[in-house]
Length: 537
Image (cartoon, rainbow, N blue to C red; front, side, top):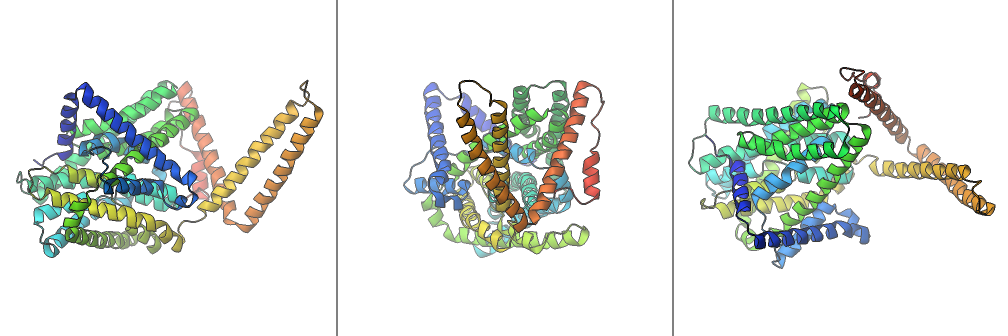
């Protein structure tokens, strides 16, 4: 039986927590508050220094962490158990909650190809390269490949959202990141057993382990997800429903790991079900907004800590001693990523009608950022393994390279390939519309309170004149914007269709909640707009 690394980590973390005395708890709390203060301070820097807007705040946190590491200031000792059991579940759940099943279903085949085939290609390619070019023992090389086989969903999701990437491109990247994360943990557990001499790998044992781990993860995640979805139909208590989603994110992870499954896959399954099914049948529109906002906050909160600590954990002396191994690792990682993306992309384009253009494949290749999951897996390698330091150095060096080099250059790449689309234009347009709506309501309020006593009529007239002048300027700006950017009109129509579909779904959900319907009806408008090719992509 393969070594279940993540379960051992959780058990180790739990046993350590029990042994903490009050003094240690106070020290840990101070360290946590220090990390939080630094990370939140860094996150606000772009609001103070304008040119820092060019750098995504997650990468800015890594850079600041590197600066602290360079002067040997360690905010906290980052343990793999901390990342895997505390930081990872909420980040995975938030990404899955916001991933629309309709979008995921459209590209499910290439996502699965990249998630499964990409892990195999990366592990094999990196291992062969390190073994042949850097004389690294094959079991050690395989462990390094397994650690780096996952494109970290934490890094990728945060980066693509900040850049305002195209919706379909973001879905493929996030979907692959969410699923291949679980595959990487499975591969790492299997290869760890071989490196420790606990078992011999055979095709049958690998397949059996894969089916068991993934199957248990999907089973537990789906059961909990559907169970909470139907429970929340019985009441409308936003704080309780919000708490249930938080408990489910951690609960399914720990339960799946204890039962020999993949906690990552379980969290992703639960998040997808609650975000796409449970939030529609079991939550009122107001509750959905509250829960979504809560997870947006929690994602920002945890991301701010994780990325700062990634930079802060770098040991430059160790990196310097293993530059050769790091260089080979980075080179093979890029090569295997290219083979996986372009090769599997070509295969997918031949089998299904919905193609992934070469430009988008290029972004998927360059956007294969590694992050906290890779670091957690590397740190979880047993100290009894002689080459542990080389594994950690190779993984840390590769992660650092992808975060800084790829992370800082992907926006110029997407701009050069013209894949950022009209996201900045859309944002400006939405801001103008929002201001027009707000001032129109203010003007309406002035009309309603104009007869209020003890207020001079001139105040009303002056206020109305200022607001009406601004409304005219905004209307001119909006009209000019629509003329100069015809594509905005299609987007406006798509947004309206999305709103109409949401209203229809909310009405069915309310009728189910009140007992007038036994089950929620399928969306008439969704099918109609889809048939007319007017549904927003």
